[in-house]
Image (cartoon, one colour):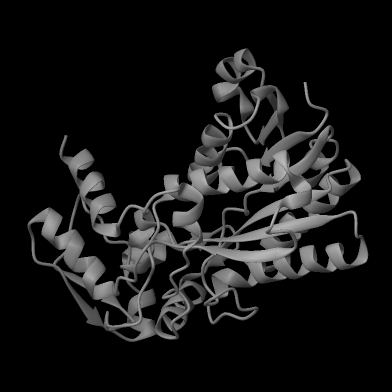
Length: 319
């Protein structure tokens, strides 16, 4: 058994689950530590494979202490919220706890706003990611034994409801009201499971050859193979549904006051619909219209296009 282990936290959710499922095919499961709020769900199957499972929770910082013991590297999945300071502080607490447990490399799941990995974004949702990227870079500059890789994960094809006023394919409306006219620039959508697969491959590459790893102390972008305007994205959905759907540009106030947006954007800290609306500013500025070849390179194949992913989602709904 290798003395160096890889921890994933949180090992849950769509990206976290996809990443660890692919990682377990690439490295010895005995060298993997999966940390989540409720590890019991898949624990018997994972323990049988030799995986170590542990419980920890971003919202309970005390549970992070020793959660990363025995790991030399950590795949840190971002806190599931669009909040800024609380989200960043949760990331920082996890990184600090990991370093106290002798983790020397962190791969962090950032988000594909900010254009070609620029340190600025109009999107409120990216601010905690930017702070986390800066914190990792500061740590690496102060401690040469510590390294990081920040992966700006492409906007999920499956997350199109977030950018279409929470459009529901099970109950489709004919008109999508957003503060954007749907024209260029657009989004280089990427399939969640392909992002998880590529992320796992990058983590495994570092684990197997840390000295020759090309992405040390870098922020990189994983994106889909082409840019789809929001209008093209909606047309692809409408085509698969067999129903006409159009975008109507509205003011930010009209957008945020829609019941679908209000209900989706209410957190413990209150309603964040107006903060979320800043993504449309970022899209308009071209922040999500950057195509990087890295996802295809790491996968070893062309990533799945948005319309094919949507086709699968709608086909699954019809079964």
